[in-house]
Length: 334
Image (cartoon, rainbow, N blue to C red):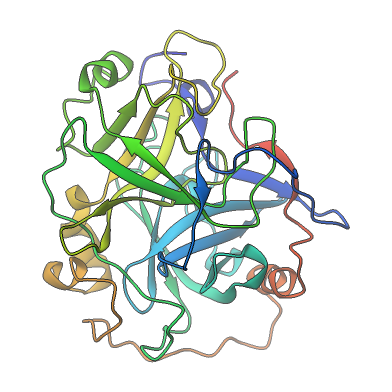
């Protein structure tokens, strides 16, 4: 469905977040793909991968994210904002899971602050990025959790990147217990421009992938990274999973050859990320080994009041994730 970019989110396509509801048992389908066309991640090779749970009035939303320093996660703005206002949700409503490919075995960190890009437009879904600052910093001695950098590679059509996430198994399926990965090829930009006239090429504010039949992200993968593998073999952030839609159609199905998927170009916004985190651009481009960064904030202890985020923490740590069940499409086109 291709409508003007002044259309609201509900007419633009499908945002790749998932809203879930509290039920007694956690259920997933026994077969079918997770990330569409993907495979399970082996060997915990993406130790920077984060799963975010955002407590909403309707339930709990699931998104992805990427750890970029000892206490900052990069994600999509639409994951951590109110649907019809674009305002940031309260930090106490957000919790992050890190340290495991198994969603039932993550270590939970509460959010201290939500920082949404000031130009984020929830109607057009532009400038779709945000930062989640954690209350407690990741220890450099933690072997299971590492942060990664933002690539400055010149991205072009035809380049193959890697998307990861715990998103839906299929258009009608459930979220995945296990982190999965899928190869996604950028371009062709011609198709991307036809879908979105504001798109020029892969060097702008968005990256775009089309004609990736059965290789795609889906609901629940929003905010997670699109990764570039450099010549040293390190995975760095190229994009942030944002949205996808089918031009000329009233419905969108993940993984079909007609879907055009858009990702926020992380490098395009590195100046803003550096300013908000007080981390130099050179350090933000660093590798995935934990070390010192420019953010020297002390760890914070949570208060004694039970917050919405603590409710999420309790649900995450009481496993299995009893609230991640009964998937509904967060925003499908009307």
